[in-house]
Length: 195
Image (tube, rainbow, N blue to C red; front, side, top):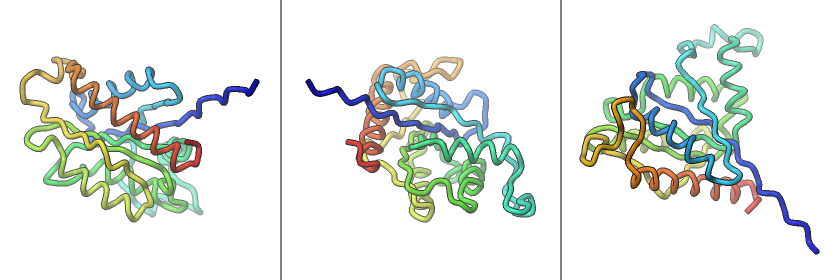
């Protein structure tokens, strides 16, 4: 009788481009982390980018980084995949998110050959324009994004998507979010040759 192979474990670092306490984008990540518990083999951890200083290469001394930056870099290094919650500011990604990306791209580039997915919530296009700039950055840092499904959420169209605490309450949206996680898991296994 053949042994059953264990389910491969994929570690996902979840990063939010908004630092606002009541951010709907951080609400998406909290929901994604909760949903990930129902997906066998997917482990997701929220990685806080708010303590990172502005990128300044003067802070790099003899190839070492400030402790807070090194701790962040180690979280990215340990991850197989990245889930970005990327709000749209002025048709692009946020300053804090770009700063985090830049810190982890310093030599050695820790994003290289990892998989990623993007979700966003906001008004109008639901943060969608930020996705395309983030994908463009991904080309240079060698980050591989899933193509489908795309996830942009207009947070203000009825029915209500979030409660007063910023928690995702809409079941249809949760299903779409879970589909992103399943796609990210499958794509990561494929890229790692484990599917």
